[in-house]
Length: 289
Picture (cartoon, rainbow, N blue to C red):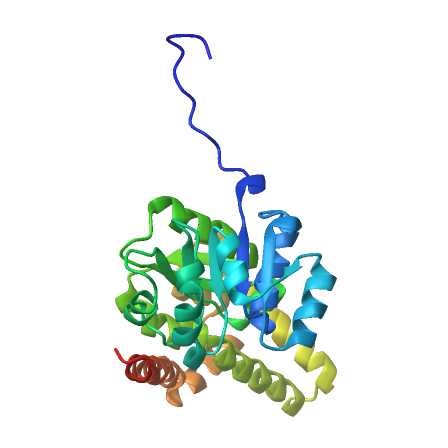
C-alpha cells in the first residue's frame, strides 16, 4: 500500500470463518445443512459432534464436514453452536470452556436456558448469545430470535444473524423477551398446525375430500402469512380486504369471535411463555445458579 493511502477495512469472507456444532440432532443438523447450502462457511471449516457416534458419522459423511469431540471442535471454531438438550447445556459448556479459542462466540439454542447459566458455565468474559429457533427451520422457513450476552460484540451478533439467516427470519431481542418469543414463535407452529387441521376438517364437513381440504388449508395459511410479511400491512387491514359486508367471510369471522378464537390464542402464548420462564428457573437451579 502506498504511503498516505487510506487503510481498507478487512472484509470477513466465508473463507475466514470456522464453525462447530455441538449436537447434531434434528435442529443441529438443520443448522449445519442451511449454513452450508448458503455458502456461509466452507465445509472443510465445519466441525460437528454428538454423543450418538452413529449419527455423528452419518452427518459428517453426508454433509462433508469433520467429526470431532466436543473439546476438539471448540478448540478449532470461531463460532460454537451448542445444540443439546437443556439439561446438558451446563455440563457441555464446562467441558468445552477450557478449549475455546480466544474470542470465540458460543451460541446456545436450548429452550429456557438463560444467559446467566450459559455465561456462568463458561470462562469469564466469553462472548455468548442465546438463540430461539423454531421447527420450520428444518425447511429453511424458521423464525429465530437472538439475545446477545454481555460480552458479545456487534460483529459476533451480526455473524449470528448471518448464520441463522440461512434458516429463516431473524430478530434481535433483549433476553427479557425470550420467554415471550418461546411462547409465540417457539410454540407457535403447534398452534398453527391445530388451526390447519381444524380448517381442513371444516372443509371436509362442508363436503371436500380430505386430501383436497388439507392442501387448500395449508396453502391458505402459508399464503396469508406471506401476505403479512411481504406487504407489511397490518393483519386487521388484510382481514378487512377479504371481509365484505354481509358476505361469507364475516359470517365465519363472527363465529370465531363468538367462540373466543383470538382470546384463546393469546392465552396459549401466555401459558407457553410462563412455562418457558419456569423451565429457565429450573435450568438455573440444576446448574447451581
